Image (cartoon, rainbow, N blue to C red; front, side, top):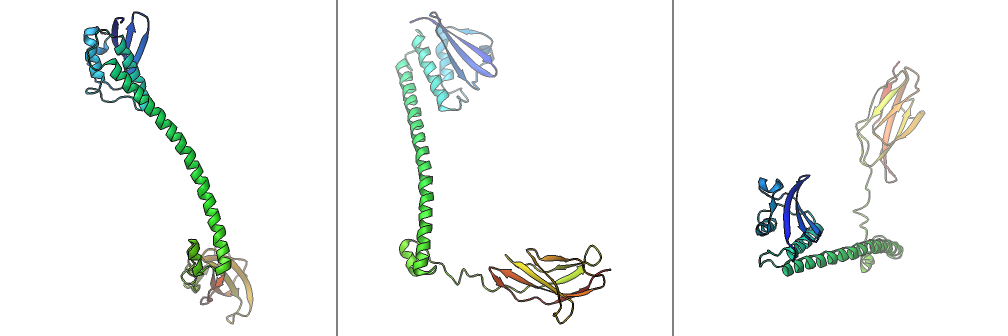
Length: 263
């Protein structure tokens, strides 16, 4: 077996161990954050008598961190196996056969995991497709059972579907709008109406030119609990009311608010 010289060098923060043989073959074992004495990184050459001690240090007890992925560890242990094979003065343990067997086993494990992950990716994609198809089919069955038994029909349970509780899920009565006020707007002949909001409701607004509410002057629809009344003749008095609209149902009219448009 050819003789071997090992050299430690510090390259860009990484400790690199070079194995050089008389046949000009070379191998590089690159490890991160190895706790190496300062003298060991000043170009000192370690002869075969010191080689075993270096490999013992690289083997684990004084090593803080190996490369971050299993692939790099596999590369490193393969390089270590080659180094052992080339070193005549290597101690009796660990043997080249032991190290190489572990490298081969790690290689097989990495390949097996890669194959499994590829298969899992395909299976997950298929699962997503089948899941969407199942949901679409359930919607079709739900619509059919609605037509056969009604949305609240108990027979929907036979198909794995929950009947709709019409009472519980009904919108209920629409609350009456309260807290209606009228205030001066930003310009002449304008007013601002505000009221307390009703959840999930829009609003129907009307204003009149008399207290009898028989002279409709204008109307509006708002999704907010406020509306601007513009274009009034300065000094005009209006009477305004609001009701809520929700789920196609109208609530009761609010109390009437009145104010004279600013001049």
